[in-house]
Length: 606
View 1 (tube, rainbow, N blue to C red):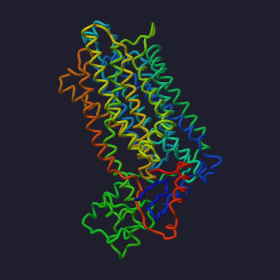
View 2 (view 1 turned 60 degrees about the horizontal axis):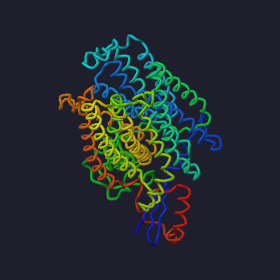
View 3 (view 1 turned 45 degrees about the vertical axis):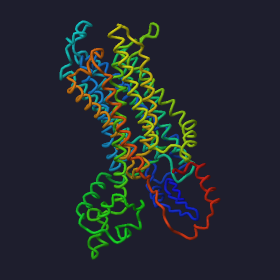
View 4 (view 1 turned 30 degrees about the vertical axis):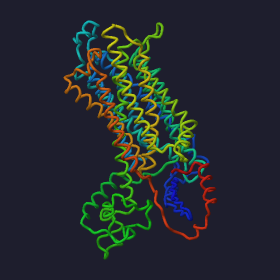
C-alpha cells in the first residue's frame, strides 16, 4: 500500500515501512521575489493578509457589477430598442463575453512578462471605466438608436434595425470593456492570493478560504447588478444604469491605489509564452537526438525546482546539452538548451489542456442564461401584483443559488463528500468540475421541457405561464457554476506553474471565452441548418426547446470525455521517491500524527 500526499511545496510518499520527505527549492526563491511597494523585502506584520486581499477583491467586485449589469440585460436592449433579431442579439452578447474572457490571456501575459499583477489590474481597471463611460453615452444619445417601433410593426417584423453607424459606438464601448475586464479577471485572483505566504501555516490556511470568499464576493456583485442595475436600466434609463457601473469602477480603481502600501508584490519573471515557445522549438530541433542514459544528465537537473516526470518525454530533448566541449557555456543560453525546470513547466501547461477543452461546453450552457433564457422571460408572466419583474432580474436566482452553494460548501458539501469518498479533501478540484458538468446537462433537459410547455400553453391556450418556471434552470446552472468555477480556478492555479500563475488564470478564463464563442457558433449553425425555424425573435413561432435538447446531448457526450481525462490526470508532484535511511525510522503512528497536524493546518491535499 502506498499513499501520496501533496503539500504546497512538499511531496510525501508513505508506504508500510517508510516515508520520504522531499522539499522543493521554491520556498526560498518565492521569499526573495516578494517585495513591498518600495521594492524592499516585505514585513509580514504590515503587509498582505485579509486587509490587502479585501481591497483587491473590491476591483473584481466592481468588474463583475459592470460585466453582469451589461451582459444579463443587453439582449433585451438589442432586441427591444435596436430591433435586432434574437439570434443576432444572442451572438453579440456571447461574443462580447467571449472576448472579455479571452483577453484574460493578454492580461496574464502582460502581468507575467513585464508589468506585474498590481500595475496590470490598475491599468485595465481604468480601461474598463472608460469603456462603461462610452456605453453610457452610446445608450443615452437618441441618434444612436433607430426609430421606435409600435407593437403592430414589431409583430409583423417591420421594425427598422440599427444601422452600422449606430452599432459602431456600441461595439467600441463593449470591446473596450472587454479589454479592461480581461486584464482584471486574469490577475486579480492571483494578486489576491499573493497576499498570503504559503510557507506560513496560518496564512496558507487563509489562502485556502480565499478562493471561496473571492467567488462569494463576485457573486454578491453579480446579484447587485441583476437586481438593482437591471431595474434601473429598464425603469429609469440605460444611461443611468451604466453610469452607476462606471462610477463603481472608478471608485474601485481609487481604492486599489489607496491600498498600495499594504500590498505584497511579486516581481514578473519574464514571458511564460516565450518559455513555452522556446521549449517546443528546441524539442523539435533536437527530435533526432537520442535520450540520455539517465535524466540527471539533462541541463540543470540537480537544481530543478519542479520534479522531473516521464510524461511528454519528447520535450526532455529540449534540455539535452548537445556539445559537451562547450557544455558550461551552452547551459546558460536558453535559446540553445532549456533547463529541466522550464521543460517540466511546459509539461504542466500541456497537462491542463484536456481538462480545459472539456470545460468549454459548460460555459456554452451558462451563456444561455444571459441570452435565450432572458428572452423566454419576455414571453412569460412576470408580474407580482402590480409590479413587473424585469426579464434580466430573474437571473438573480442564478446568483442566489451560487451564493447558497458557495456558503454551504465548507459546512455541508465537503464533510459529506469526505464520508462518501473517504478522502481528507472531500472533493478534488476535478470532482467539483465533474459535478458541475452533470448539473449543466440536467439544466438543459429541464430547460427544454419548460420551454416546450411554455410555447404550447401560449400558442394553444393563449395563456402566459409564470416566469418563475425559469427558476429551476437558473438553480441548476447556478449550482453547476458554483462547482465548476471554483474547481476550475483552483485546478488551473494549483496545477499550473508557479511563475505562470496569471497565464494559468488566463487559460481558465479562455475556457469561459471559448464556451461563449461555441454558443455563437452553434446558434449560427442551427440557424442555417433549420432555416431559422428553431431560433426566432418570436419564440412562440420557433423551437427553442430543440436547441436546449441539442445542448443536453452535447453536454452528456462532453462529460464522458471529461471523465476519461480526469481519471487519467495525475496531480502535480505525486511521485514516490526512495531515499534517506534516517527517515525510514518513522513508525506508522508518527506518520499519522504528522498527517493530522497538516490536516488541521490545512496544508495537505491528496
